[in-house]
Image (spheres, rainbow, N blue to C red):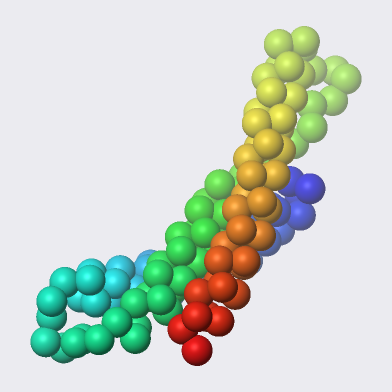
Amino acid sequence: MIERLQRIATILARFRLPLFVLAGFSLMVLVLSVLDNPLLDDDRLLMPAILGFCWALMLYSTGELFQEIPGKAGSEATFRRRMGVRVRRGILWVLGLLTIVSAAGLLILSYQLMRVWL
């Protein structure tokens, strides 16, 4: 599982700048929608701004977290080295599971918000 997330992260690493731009633009629209700004009198862009910010944050964090996964330690490695690698890979496996659950939750949130928005 974490190897597949690493492949996804290497693809997402190329889109780091567009993700920053999307997050910044979405955050700016979100703040301007919440505040009483004459440019955005109504809240019609609030839900897409929330979703754009959440997705940009999710994709960026996935790209950064799983970019470098430690390889499996061979049998010639010391006990301490093998345990260190196993602990790091175990933590990344748990974080990968949490990432997948968060992405599923964000997908459900996206569906619900877009249904209400449209």
